Length: 178
Image 1 (tube, rainbow, N blue to C red):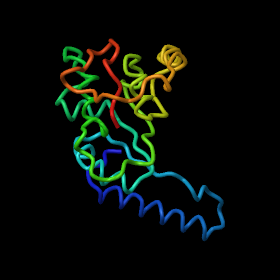
Image 2: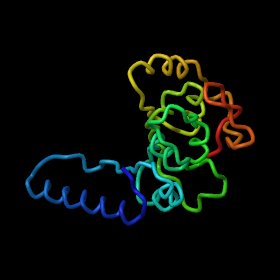
Image 3: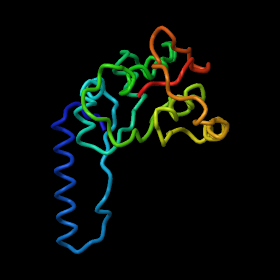
Image 4: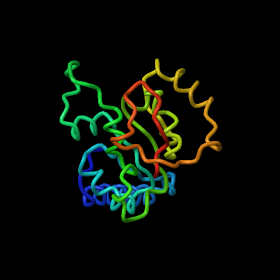
């Protein structure tokens, strides 16, 4: 969490390698193929997503913090406009020219309030998201949307951008280009 540089991710992976070495020395069993991911929840992580992708197996997008830091919002202030579609446009994969390196092996999940936004559920699935984190009361509505989607019918063909972004609570105008 809160990764802002490639070095931070590399340091965290080095600690994990030390733990693996200790477990092997102690004869303890563990998953040798444990995937390592990073949470994209700071603007700095978005800007270096291509570099981070080379070092990890998956990304999870931390939408609450990313919204707050990118849009300079106080999440505790109910008077401020929710900005779910603005945050989505900031996530890795939404800028056609931002990525110079390979993507992570998969985009793991969406964490935060956007995971429960049924207007974005199909968009997330078309991006390759395979986990949506949400509160318990949102599970059934999101599950209903997921079961109604046929991902084979509409290919990913448009990037969600400022000109065609749907307001929160409405259907997105097109799928995202990853």
